Image (cartoon, rainbow, N blue to C red):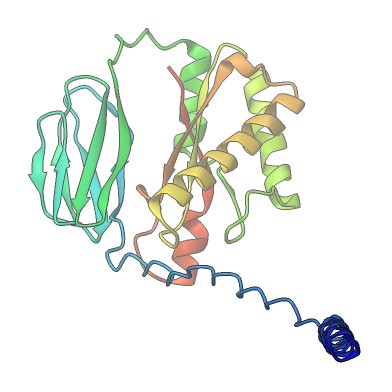
Length: 258
């Protein structure tokens, strides 16, 4: 009986030791989470190897009388074909064309290439001349003074539209003639030398004509007796390609107005 009891007690001691041993066993660390998925990267799209076309078009002169001519000029880049509307049609990538529009017309040029399409426009204004009114005595006097060189033009520095002291003195004398013959009219023309683009020179010629007009109005000449127009480089006084000729061509010129 004691032997059996000892065996039972020994078994319980063994069981208790195993349980205690297992309770002291170190816990395993938690599993390491997997790394987040890498963000998908894409190479940047390669640049478009085909540049878009460009086009420019101009009309010179931009204002003409009916049955007169003007010249369209255009220039393109990266164009496979060029078309100008209003009866012109397909043209070379760059060039010029003399036209005689019957009425005021806007010409639109379209350049098409592998890189797309581009457009530009130029406006031609057709002026219908009116019957000339009979010259008044005052008008004949002013036009005679202009023809004799007594009613003088004024000149400008290169790329400038500012009046010099000499120009203002000339305009004071011209204003005196205009006040002396109040029933007369004048046309003020703005001119440039040939350097610079046509568009730039037309704008510069306009500024020269306008500053002359404004100064004459300050001297008491009625605004409704004067008109302005810009010819840019189209009508040089001296066609020579010298500095002396260029200086003569940078001017505000006077004609009798009708």
